[in-house]
Structure formats: structure tokens, C-alpha cells
Length: 124
Image 1: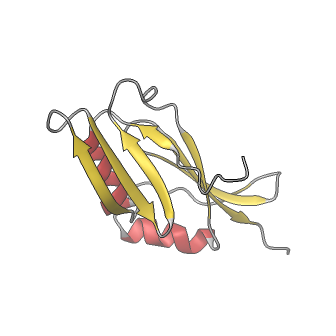
Image 2 (image 1 turned 45 degrees about the horizontal axis):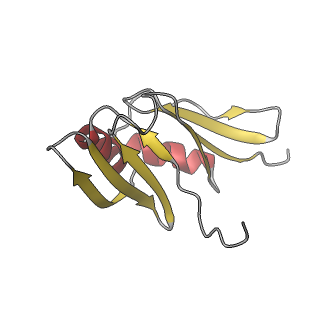
Image 3 (image 1 turned 30 degrees about the vertical axis):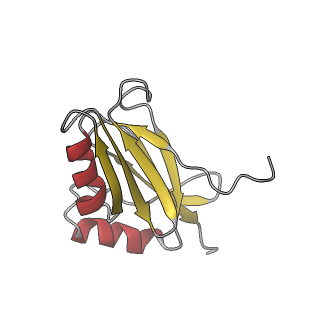
């Protein structure tokens, strides 16, 4: 498998329009494409943070609503928290220190999928 160039999670959502709005307006993803067979659902979208893509799908064969757990490595968890709050995301939790050495925030999207953001804890 040495020719794999990227890994892209597919996150199952109920409504593609609402999901695209949440991921772009609240989390700052760039919308690269949106496809819909029968407007607006089922639909499929590609959103990105820089070179990192995530696919959103309301097609029934693409998983179960609320089952995704996606981990995002970030360089500064406190800065991310501030950015999420400035974007209007309600109830952004305080970062928590994990036993495995990460400082993390967990966000749940409107469909129940969990997005985990983490940065290495700084030595005290």
C-alpha cells in the first residue's frame, strides 16, 4: 500500500445542506464541492481545512448517523477554542488533559458525530 496518497473520512449526516453549513460556518472548512441527486438529499460534499479533506454524505449506504469519530491534530488547542468561539460555536468545552499526553476538545456535530481536536501537552 505504498502508493496511498491520502486518507479521507466519510462522515454520515442526515441533511447535506445543514452539515455543509455547520462545517463551513462554524468550523471554518472550505467547501470544495457539493453533489445532490435529488435536491437537497441525498447529497455528498467535500470540505477542507487546507490540504486535509473530509467528505460528508447523506446517502444511506455511507454509514450510520452519529457513528463517526474523527481526530484532528492541531498546533495550539487554546487558539482553536478561541477561533471556534469567535465563529459562534456554542458550548465549546475547556480543553482537557488526557492520560496519553494530549490536550483535547471534543465537539459534536448536529448529527451526533464526534470531532476530537488535540495537541500535545506542554511540559510544565
